[in-house]
Length: 487
Image 1 (cartoon, rainbow, N blue to C red):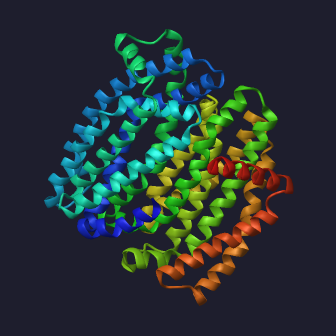
Image 2: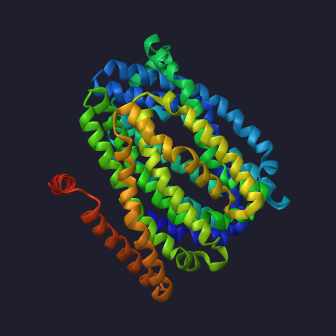
Image 3: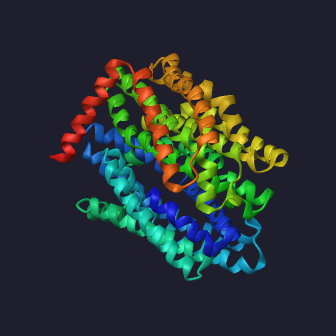
């Protein structure tokens, strides 16, 4: 999927040009804010379903699904109104040239068809709660392939920003159809009970208890993650969103893959917590933290070293936003992946309120600093704001919170991150010198050298960072998975 996406982007950029490409990126961010209209419903359903699955309480799961479908149907109706409002104010939100104004409005309106699939969102929570993330990965791959193919065809056909929205809606339809197929034995009874009337009060009460804190958490997450492009578009120019996004593409891909470790693990960690297996929970969390840090650095060190050459070959050197943006994106990507893993532990066990104070303070700081730094330093401003907010709040507060909630020593969590970083810093300095002196300039050479840099770091980390018992445990599980895959 990474290769396909990287191949498709220069073609889409060629047919759309910088302003429309950047405008669509910002359109996607604004549409993402419609997710707030669920008022924390999804984040409330996921831990409740996971805990009910851990207890093998099928009736509770069914009641939660009925509650979710009915509530999300109301969210879909309100979201349609939100789409219309966004379309009406489209050119004020995204200041494009007048000739692109209608295209931009139609793009928002087409997105309205996507919100009609919102009532199906509980089925994703059901699959995650059952620890079947491998199915979600397969369905998301099919969705990405559909979106990429549609984006290419419609950009070539001259459909502009509207065509990109059409591709996204079709891809979402493919994903949701696959979800319904996987849950086909349960879909009829869930929808029939949802039509007949509300689920028992116990299920609705459980969801309401987590609604408000989850909504606040989602709001902070949206502001932190979806504001950068909007700030660049509003304070600088929609056209500058293009180099800003493209320079971060490799780091964004690495961050997304790293976050899938937490996405795939939170339900199992929630099950361990629900069963009171504290020692196993602590051991797994420390292990996962170390794995995320090592894999993240193995991916990000070569990306920082070779990103200039990569972007120059990929979309042209004129669209490379600079080494500072690359470095900041890498730092933020690694920290976000680690904090996401720890955050899933809190949200997955229903302890969302415990992380709210920290999240609110960090989000406010991030937003204020991002705007201030954009005025002061230009394109790097939003990333500088994010880095500063992480350093001021999460770096010290999150380990303490994990220690209080799950009795995992904060010092050991910090060590799991600090040891890989201590190994990576001198290694990265050597690699930077080698790249500047002997770095490849062609596709094959860059790919070979980036892979070599990553493999060498992984080997060093395997020997230096991981303890012998961790190496034995990881190898044992790897062999088990290999046997299962080849059976």
